[in-house]
Amino acid sequence: MYSQGVLATHGSTRRKCLLAAYWFPPFAGSDALSSLAVVNALVERGYDVTVLAADQWTYGLAGQAIDLTLTKMIDPAVSVYRWPFPLGPDDPLVNRWSQQRQKLFSLSATKQTAWQETAKRQWSRIWPEPDCGANFGRVYQPITAAARHLHRVNQFDLVMATAGPWVDFAVPLILGAFTGVPTVIIDRDAWLFDVLAGEPCVGADLIEPLLGQLLSQVTRAWYISEPIAELHRQRFAEHAAKIKVVPNDWDPEKLAADSRPPQRQGDWSLDQAFQDLEEALGWN
Image (tube, rainbow, N blue to C red; front, side, top):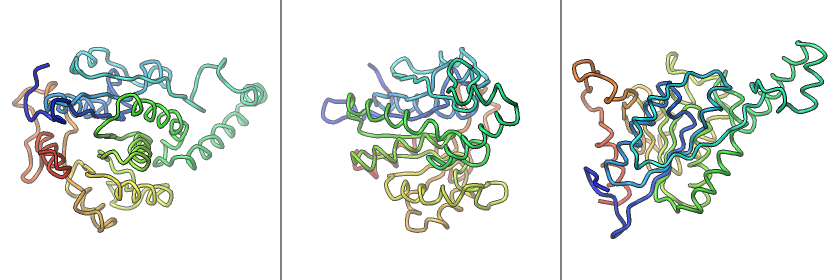
């Protein structure tokens, strides 16, 4: 396969990268477009890329917007491993509910709501998400199990994860800790902070130790702006050198050249970010 840019190789073998991206085309949100830009850039640099994402039906059942035309923008060389992740309390399919939930639902809407809130609190203790995303803890076990399976089969050289939801970060946390594979997190909207207020978000007491562990393991952590990156450098001063600004929250293939946002001084393109990463890993 022809590829532009630096060919990432071990001798004659192309390096392999896994990206954990729960939101990925055909999901039609900005998180999916950012992930799309990352995987296409990796292919251009010569990587074999695998994406671990939720399947189309997971998005549909959760009431998320879907645009099937977005899948045509995924480089054909990218392998997408789609998994039907559980929806937990938000699952609208009654035949998949537990007997306990069905019984509660038949009694009263109040008890059903109470059951949902209890379930979300339990999931948030497994994997915390800021505020309304609390029930993504239901995805922790299946996404890490799928990632371990894919790594056993492919033996990845690099593992990346993009948020949200931040449960994607469980993949580099687990694989990095148990296999030593290099990892990168793309913490776009800041897991730990309310970026508008500049203060720790709801659930920060649970998030901070996990993010600290992640930053101790990763090779790089990418943030979308300098103010957000600086919040993290101040909070995790010992890992400040790993924290970089990479604003990639728009897809150049979907915007006309004259409507693209200007690149701010000091901001990196994805290509520059990958050059820095490869230098840090000694791959150049």
